[in-house]
Image (cartoon, rainbow, N blue to C red; front, side, top):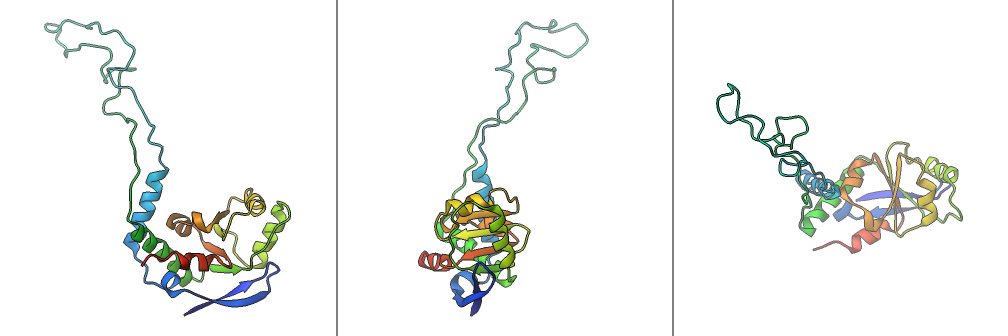
Length: 209
């Protein structure tokens, strides 16, 4: 059973919560994490890379030299890939890189990543709070008060908050997402995880049996 202190934004402890063992206390499955991260990165690719082959290059198709008797190789067109400006041989063509994964496998990967963070004591919890206006300096002070760290912090909200998001946008080491956007790659790519109280309950409600 894992218990975590829930901090107020001034750094004092408000209460203690018990994390769900099915989410934060499982034996991590490294292969599931690998597959989910691989899928996530593949799905980010546009697949629009394109080069021209010899049928698309704008050159004359006139035969360069006669077929026989020159003492050299046979050449039929400047479009050939061996010439500067010729078509590229086996170049990239538009394609779809998207992959699919079973939903339960993705859940296993996500919970494995969360369990790794729990084992590393890299999870901090904070009470829900509201920012009246976007203030980066104020947001940095909150991170310092709860000792969230200064390298690759993933801040997870129960629901969207425009002011909190805008307050963090200028911070390259901080990424603010909602619980709906949480994914294995984002968790594994962060050094520390800050969960706003209530996120753990939403995750628990979505467990697929």
